[in-house]
Amino acid sequence: MPPSSLRVVYAFAREMHPKTSDVFIQYGTAGFRTKANLLEHVVYRMGLLAVIRSRVKNGRTIGMMITASHNLEPDNGVKLVDPDGEMLEQSWEEIATRLANVSDNDLESTTAEVIKEVNADMALKASVFIGMDTRYTSPRLAAAAANGVIALKGTPKEFGIVTTPILHFCVKCRNDNTYGTPTEEGYYEKIVGAFKNIRQKLPVSGDYNTTLYVDGANGVGGKKLNIIKKSLDGELDLKLFNLGGNGGKLNLNCGADFVKVSQKPPVGVEHAPFQRVASLDGDADRIIYYFLDDQNVMYLLDGDRIATLLASYITRQLAASGAHTLRLGLVQTAYANGGSTKYITEELKVPVSCVKTGVKHLHHAALAYDVGVYFEANGHGTVVYSDNAKKTIARIAREGEPEQRAAADLLLNFIDMTNETVGDAISDLFLVETVLCARGIAAPHWLASYQDLPCRQLKVTVQDRNAISTTDAERQCTSPEGLQSRINELVTTYKDGRAFVRPSGTEDVVRVYAEADTQLNADKLAAEVAQAVFELAGGVGARPELPA
Ligand code: 16G
Ligand code: MG
Image (cartoon, rainbow, N blue to C red; front, side, top):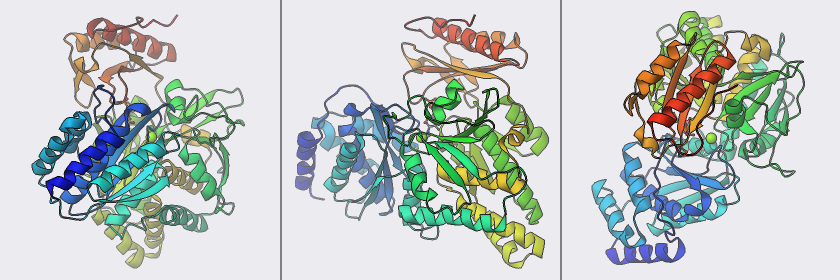
């Protein structure tokens, strides 16, 4: 592209999407995320970057998702999706941050520098898929994204309001047509189609019942399930709540993050004793389950539970199909409840690895297995299958003994039902429902497989959260000096005590996690660790209080 036409690009940027704030913004765990009114220039520039990335990838399609996931309505965000439907390669995060923060005057030279640095052939075609969540600020940001793409002569395709995982799926399909059709309909056909197929083969039995309540967090996931619901012929009776109407506010006192962190049921959902409820987050890439008993006590079935449920089912199916050579492994983070890790190693006897928070880390580690099951305790996760695993299972489904064939055939449907690109609340919901149905169990039975240790999460505001650095998959902190030894001392005073601290990647806070033998002890340990952070890492505002 001749320099003169680039000039127009930057003049356009200045006029249409000017940088109006000097607040530094960083491409974090899940892209850029902040107040929506600070993002327009960032999103425009990410449109430019997506085109550059597409050209570096030989014209393969890149995705841009406008969302701030589980954050409240005033926030928004943007993240880039790589050609295989995965998160943007980590080495590009720094480039994204640089481009987002330069002044309008330096945008031209910085973009030219980036193009040179990554060796992009600007004569190639470039394709960018753009999706957005239901926030009222999203359409404006999606338009800025498209303008950025057009500015560098890329081709944007807008998907309108979609879940984050639908966009990831479409990007993957566009670059690999064996995976599916790159449209929202293509997604339903593959994922929901596989669920319906499996229900033909696995009739409802035992204590499983087909009614499922869903908390849609007043976001996009509930709306999409409302579309899907109409095509389910009694295979699953979805009762949907928090669909965004009736004044319900996005993620406010509802949704997967609220339920998991506060350990309280969401507002806006009817409850019936022992009726399982699935709670989604605002962009539907997370899901957790829970139920209330007849005393209104809540029992959470979080990402760890979903991971163990899926891993044990797949392990059995692999054994039944005779695919003994395939290695299944599970990936968790430091947030995984100690109870789950014990169950996985001692009962399921499945290898488990622990990695840093953030989907990209889990996803990457899961690819090391033939079948990699990864979940964060907060409900973000999926299963990935190697080509070898898929080929082996498909071969058995064709050539195995009759019983092996049947097990392998079910597994093929299970794979089709899985959105392997990223954690997906809708796909995970169908996976969980399939396993519960196959085992003929209700939620209390699922809960009984192991016992969670009581836990508590807190946050502490400090002057600079980057003063906290960690190692060993965030389980140990290396600075500030003295904090880890203080945590060690505190932990030893509690039975089954475990605690860690880490700087958040999405909020300007330090997060504290603690677990212990009783809820009171977990609460106390968390508060004591929070106080230690406050003292040793430059806390600001009110000092964390100990529970009474
Ligand atoms: C983002 C991550 C999620 C992680 C969370 C941690 C993705 C798509 N999402 O939402 O995996 O659990 O950040 O947030 O990677 P925190 O750093 O604020 O604790
Ligand atoms: Mg999300």
